[in-house]
Image (cartoon, rainbow, N blue to C red; front, side, top):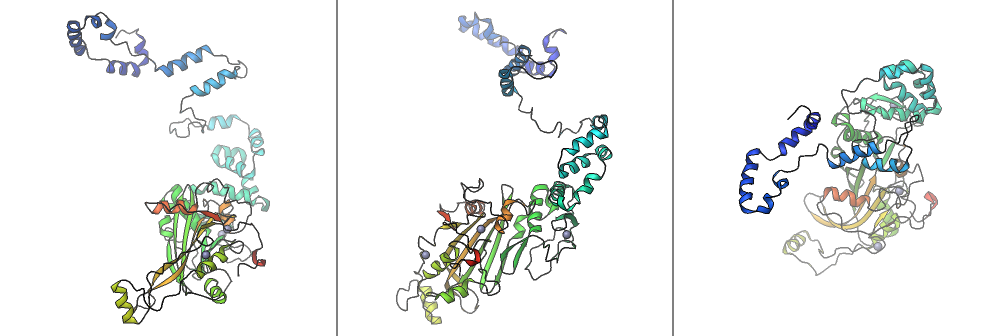
Length: 486
Ligand SMILES: [Zn+2]
Ligand SMILES: [Zn+2]
Ligand SMILES: [Zn+2]
């Protein structure tokens, strides 16, 4: 190739063009064979000699040409004067012409300290003045040069009581730089994790601090937590740990799989399971207890409500008193069939067992629920769904005799939020701390239910299409004053 050929300047591109060109030896072979068989082809030398590879790909060539043709740029402002050009150039931008921070992933990027120093401290102070306290502090912490220009005053400002929210906002941003610490919301400061990597959810009566905190037992400023069931709390710190571990890496917290628990209390058995979907932590709690048929209302209440705080024994969101959750549970209890005294026994094994133990058991008595208590219910005010079922379950309370009994099972699926702060909409809504969450129109769950997302993650076949209806169709909010809950 001659020194003045255009390919020489293109370097790599010309190398590729040469590599893709057929070999000389092959060309001669083809020439020979074609000239004898097809004279028309032989007459066209362009077929034998493929056109030289263009130096530029067609789109690139178009871009170059367009740049030259429409260099209609304002010399003073550097802006394009022609709107058509602006719109057209948007389509021609390279996919990597992103508007992200310049050279964010460029290790060999020139340090910008010099540019920062070019601006006087007064100008930096002016820039910081336009920012909210969290952003101003973030700017001051960005580099040592900026810190020298801006000074510590933006950090001191965060300590003011009225800037509590801004302080949290700032602290949440530096989460990734503190794997051994955990942000404490009542104190608005990071505490050293005292059980690093060994953090486990324990029953409420077990003292289980994850860090040493002055506000740990301050009833006026309690750490944020969510009631799973009676005697079981989910401190927000665990949501933080799970989500940090997913976001930044295992050393930042604990995996979601380690959070699941099984426990028993007051004749109920519970199991909890956690799953991360789309950057938010979902929780499923299954609560079940054996229920006798034909219970009078007073016994139904005894079965469903804890005498300690008159909350249901099963896991529920803050809005359980309003709407149809409790009436639906009572309705489901009403469907439990009475065992038949004689006949209908099927299966030799059951027959022998039952005769042996002198019991009557009717394996056919599968309970069918009605249109009121069977559908999946969604709380309209928070991301929580409930399913009430009556199932035949094995009672292992007496190891000498295994019995099958009807049990009421209440399953709850809840979104706990992204774990950055207890002020996120999901966490606030399930705890009844905010009333601006509309579960039926929220973009996360407008199309697909929480239960459906959760179950699809664990079972190959997703939950059969269930009708999801509102837990509180009339949206009456009476709370404790309402009379249908009890
Ligand atoms: Zn603290
Ligand atoms: Zn029913
Ligand atoms: Zn709710």
